[in-house]
Image (cartoon, rainbow, N blue to C red):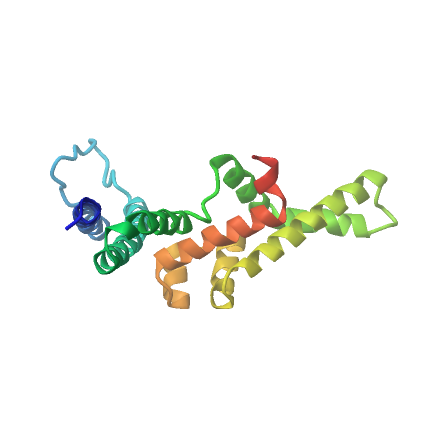
Length: 223
């Protein structure tokens, strides 16, 4: 067994340990969410407080952990593929496989936005209805000033960019993601309504936001 194979197998073991730790944390959080007033070891309850760990906070954290587990499983799958190919093709393929591994990790993170860009895109999406009102005011030529018309043009461009961002995701997810964007519907309600896991919907929303950022030119203006 080459040193390269041993290194990747060590990474797999570390990933498995991390996944198990996250699963245990999810179980603990689910217990808190189910029994919010039950005593929890290691947590000091504030006098007079019925619940210092709100159910929604626990559920949100569970969703984040599940997303981490999905990412780790993808990373593990990529490593296993690398190890199998290394064993089959020999040590001379180690550099090639390492490059494949790096690219696999890059693909997992492909649609993550820098915090400043994410903040701008979130504000644009949250203001969608206001942009519609601004655009409509500009359409009313009898009352619109020159300033109103300029603002309306900008508003229509933003609306167009947000609409276009929706087409970055698969058609199956668009209704759920649009409802989240326009109405801020909780993830668990979307999960029940559309029969998609919260983790899957969050990833699609991330991709949608990336698409909006690209359509509005935010990816380039913030670099």
